[in-house]
Length: 305
Image (tube, rainbow, N blue to C red; front, side):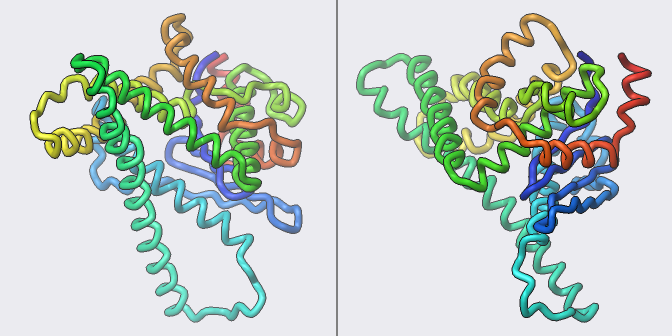
């Protein structure tokens, strides 16, 4: 298997696929049709140099993925908003609404990052304090903190997966992976081949988050500040760098079939069993449409497989 470097995210009743400088969003509309939006990809980072530096590029890629994910999610949600009583907006009103939506999107991204840091970096640190009652080993306490972080992550996924809408989102997530696996294993991209492809993929965001949990254990072990406030602040400050290292690991995993790399990827792929579900054929059709709008998979297969 060779990486196609195409990646995606799920949206409301649809899938976004990005290939280099372009991305597409395919959404299954309430009337059963498929709406597609194709646009050039523009990074929110104005400087190109940081996007090429190992361990640094992962930080900016993480921010980009959050912003693009929110933007495409809002696009997909627009098909399911209440239409009754809506009036046509003037150009001025439409521009104002667009500015408000952009502000809301940016604030939402910032809020999501703050909650993630609080839930997965700060809370596990305070909970790990219980271990200090039974051991003086800093390594043991740090590992216990990492275990708590993973447990919180798994519990979070378990509970959100119980809701109906999230279940459908996870089914689209499965369709996204299946489409990419179908291409990268040299099969023709059609419903039948996609259906029998794996719903797990080494470059998945779930695996990235799992690596964040593991890498954080290593980083946190070297925090030796005496002040509790300093230890918390250092953990928060390290989060971008942990994300950067995890990005390089997931990038390596997606481009390698090395036995050791595959072994390290296993835990993240096991967790994907919680975040991906088997899609129905209508969801697979949406995934195929999203891929074909931005990726010439036939040419890629001829040149790489």
